[in-house]
Picture 1: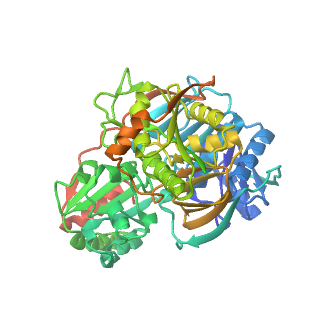
Picture 2: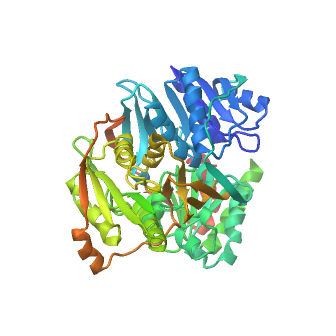
Picture 3: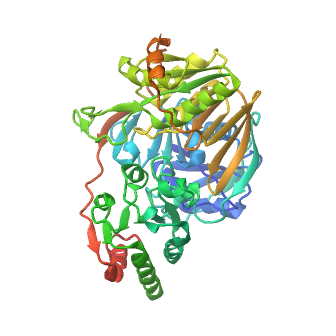
Amino acid sequence: MSVLVFVESKDGKFSKAAFEAVSYGNKIGTTTVITFGDASDDVLAGLGNYGASKVLVNKSVDGKNEQQLTRLIHAAAEATGAETVVMIQDQLGKAIAPRVAARMNAGHISGAVALPDTSNGFVVKTYVYSGKAFANVKVNTPKRVISLVSNALAPVATGGSASVEVFNADLGDAKIKVKEMKSQGAGVPLPEAELVVSAGRGLKGPENWGIVEDLAKALGATTACSRPVADIGWRPHHEHVGQTGVAIRPNLYIAAGISGAIQHLAGVNSSKTIVVINTDSEAPFFKAANYGVVGDAFDVLPRLTEAINKFKAAQ
Amino acid sequence: MKLLVCISKAPDTTSKIAFTDGNTKFDENGVQYIVNPYDEWYALVRALELVEANGGSVTTITVGTAADEPTIRKALAIGANDAVRIDAPATDPYFVAKQIAEYAKDKGFDVILTGKETIDFNGAQVSGMIAEILDLPFVSLAQKMEVAGNTATIERDVPGGSEIIEVATPFVLSAAKGMAEQRIPNMRGIMAARTKPLTVVPAVSVENATTVVSYELPPAKSECKYFTADQMDELVAALHNEAKAI
């Protein structure tokens, strides 16, 4: 079976999510990658280490233009005869995967968490109801597009190397113009983060976030927050995780001073391990937690940071 | 300005998620359906604000059965001028997108708005598919939108920052938090909604591209293990040895 995987490089590099998508493709069939931008040939060939046999790169497309990216992916699928297109369920993937599917007359699996089961048709497990359940979705069309959530399947290094070819196609006009971009600074974006430290109203004020950042720094984690904290301006909105904010699925989610309202849980309950720190032993979040500490964040967080530092030093 | 807002129903956020018929159907027993919050709070309300400022009309469109009419009337009560229901159960995103695109293709809508996703399937699929079928630009996860003449300026967060986009109408947009504030319909709105036009349109024939074969619930979480503030080394050891999270 021929598979096409679409991934995007940032600052000349590919993220772990990209390696996951290439590995996922490689488990389904012979995998070609389509990408764009200015990553070096060495970096592109390096996708072979996760199972790509060939990497197609377009150097001219404007990565902000989703209609053009859609045409690029479609053209690459036609050129390689791919029946299955794999993408990452991130912001860009959410914008273009449905377009690619409609263009290819393909069924689209949104939010895949497992490899396809081909014992009876082509069935893929996806998350639904904000992570409260899974659906096994069967694709009825000969072609299909799969959007893979990050941190679902670990990338597998194969030691291979891929050939690299420039790929051009008729991409049509650019209809969207980005006028201005504001950067929030470096760091792993929340949806891709493996480790997340989050805090809520229990921290009592924005001036107290140092203890949260210290723990995040000790772990190498990304910081997040609850909705009320973002709404009152203690923390930037892009840190808000939950139903209306960012949905995350890290390996470890540490939440301090967050009670665990159902809307918050909807954004974080796909985390593999949840640690909850709260003064209120009745906080609903403890029901969703793997590990709990009933205690004051101001007392517990510095102690946890110290224990993490000690653990890291001993490694 | 002529705006089309896609409205879907969704189970209330506090609904218990369970399945029946050998895990093939969502258990609707005791479930309260609401207008999908992203469709209502953000897409619909922003569309109403734009029309209040610039003139024009807001039409809602729903692919669904007669059982969807209470949620459609709610959207009318909030202020939409009229509503369209494509008479078919919403079984597959491509099916739904195709129905909406088919209805919208020759009506001259300036913007087709949706919520960023429904809170049941979380697929975020329909808007992009409508855009592709109609060959229109699509701006996903918009948090602010202003329209002047035939140019819209849209702000949204992107990984690592935010951006301001300019796009000419017509286009498709999915709305995220920040676009508008929820509006509670008043009694006058609710009364008026009863007599606002709700046109039922037969569905066009489209094969479902996907079918849900079965549902499953995640494995039950093991009991929460508690540590005291003095046991942080033990917690770290558990995170390393047991959870393998660090």
